[in-house]
Image 1 (cartoon, each protein chain N blue to C red):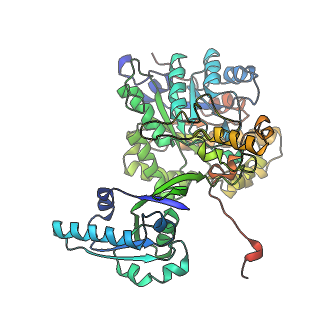
Image 2 (tube, each protein chain N blue to C red):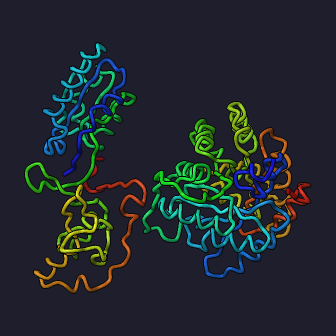
Length: 227
Length: 314
């Protein structure tokens, strides 16, 4: 799932500026599951903005809403009235939802209230770990189902670097504690599968043009197109 | 102006600072370890230009590095302007290479974003783009003027560079182009070379915007010229080079002469006419002649344009 974290309140305030009719728009899909930008979180942010407006006497009115998915046109249609009545939309969706909102209601001012950060997995309650870099060239069939592109701090393709120690990555710090060495994990799992030979062979450089280095990506499913 | 007042003290900086009309050339390093290619090109240009751009993996094709080639050019009598793109190196590598270039005696640097990898011979490579050209200009200015690395740490000896940038007066959105130049000036660029100019009326329009903002007084503007060898090159640039504006009359003019010595002569004649016209535009401080793989045309063009001998500055 796509995960995001809410921006600091002061940063959101700066983005809102002196606008008087503010709509906080949540999204009830990914960002709701990671407890950042669903309808409940939109309601909380709207309350914070309302209190601030009253404290400062700005006279700003703050509403909130949520789309089932902010990244799809038909769900945006369902909240169109509220969006059109606002001077500014403070979106709590991921970067895709925020841009969909801005495109759908152009030139409406749409600003983000969250920082979209990763494609992560809920490891346990309230903990998400990065699992996929959407690199467009998946290698995990040969790396025991563990992605070296995002789980190795250096995106290495040929096993661990010299900084792997006791199963931990050298990037492990007090702030980023216990980062597992992806290649250590891969090695152990490949051994358990009896497939160590996959790590013995040298892998060629990765095709980064299939990732973001090739320019903005596009996917078309010809067979599914509606003529 | 005394030596201590120059930012870098290069020949190019002195010529432009004294208000003399500058001429720069361009030299592309080879796709092999054959350094003699640069030696020969440098010898061909020595005495005819004030400094020579040394391209940095131009069109995203691997070549001898611009700094190594710049050093070779310098050893062969030409002052180098090393180009540095943001495509292949992050800010650590760029700062390290800039410090290294300084220690080799190279003191002109042209800061560029770089052509996208998809145009080159390693399209699967990871594009770095840690900084953009404007970030690079500012980083280099802070290194030079504030003795600071990008992270803010101080250094004992600052690298001295005359800082260049490029601008395409024909890119879109057209009304943003003068603003983009202003951003580069604010970041710290000292001189600017334009993309090849073929559409002089449009360039004049752009220069009007530049003058209206007073930008020509804040940065030295060198107008870019590419001599055409024949109609094929004109058509290629018109149709396939991003951001290039080649008017039909130029293509027609080149199409009207026979390919070979006649078209070469016509291409040089056209370049000379354009240089003379560009030199008359207020705010144009010099020309940048990009004779891509046709460096031998440069001496004839510079001479015919009445730009010889090149000035010497103390």
